[in-house]
Length: 342
Image (cartoon, rainbow, N blue to C red):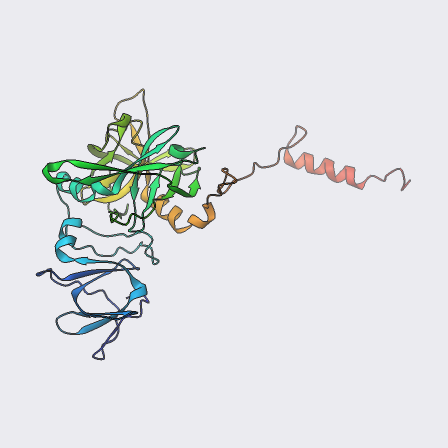
C-alpha cells in the first residue's frame, strides 16, 4: 500500500494493494494518508494500532497512517460511490484525489456543498473550498490580497433542504502564490463540527464539451450553483494556461471550485470577461496540486505580506546596440590601460 507498512496477521506480508470491500451494514471506512481506503469491521483498538476484520483476514493498521474513520452509512452520504485513489494524489494525505461515479448535479451539491465556504475580509468577499479534515481551504490570492483579517462562513445542510450559517473568525493565512492566483487558509478546528472536504480531480479525461458546475457566492448571493461546459482546457493568458468555461462566474465566485459531474474539483474559478458573454476561466487543478505540494515555498509571513517567490527582472542594457557589439565594446574598454598603468 505504497509504503504504509500494513501487515496482515495471518502471514499475508506487506499489503501492496488497497482492499475495497462491499458496503454492507455499518462497516468502518478508514481513509489512509496515501489516499487509499480500507473497509471492514474494527474489532480491536490499541494505542498505536487498529485491527480491522476484512472478512477473510485481520489487518493491522498503524494509527499514524489514518486520516479519518467513519461508518459506511456516513460514507454513502459523503461520496457518490467508493473512492479509488488516483495516481497523482498526495502521499502525505494533505489533499485527497479520487475517481467517483457520474452523479446528478443536485446530489453532488448536497454531498459536497458543505465544503464550499464564503471568504470575508474587510475589503470584500469571495469563495473557497475545504480540502481536508483539518480545515485547510483553497481560495484565490486576489480575494485576500493585502488583508490580514480573514473570516469564513460555513454552510451546514439542515432538515427541509435549508442551510445553517456558521461564521468563523481568526482564519490563518498559510501560503500565497500571486503568480497562479492561489492562497491557502487554515480554519480553526471547531469542537462541535467536523469539516466536510472535497476531492481533487484530474485533467486527464477532461475535454472540451464536458459538463462542469461551480458553487460560490456571486455578488454576495450565498451558495449559488451554476452549470455549463468546458469551452477549452488550454486558454493561454500571460504564460499561464486556464480552463475556459461558459459556466456563469461573477465577482464573489472567485476562489470557489469548478467541479466535474463526478463531484471532483477540476479548477478554481478566478476571472471572467465582463464585456463578453459566457467567457469565464478557472485555474486548472494541476496548478492547485503543485501549489499545495510546495506550500512551504510560498509560506505567508505576517510581518511581510509580500511573501512567495518573486522573480527579478533581467538586467537591461545601458546603451543601444546589439548584445554582441555591446560585449565587444566592454571588452575593448577593459583592455585599455589606465592612467596609473601609463
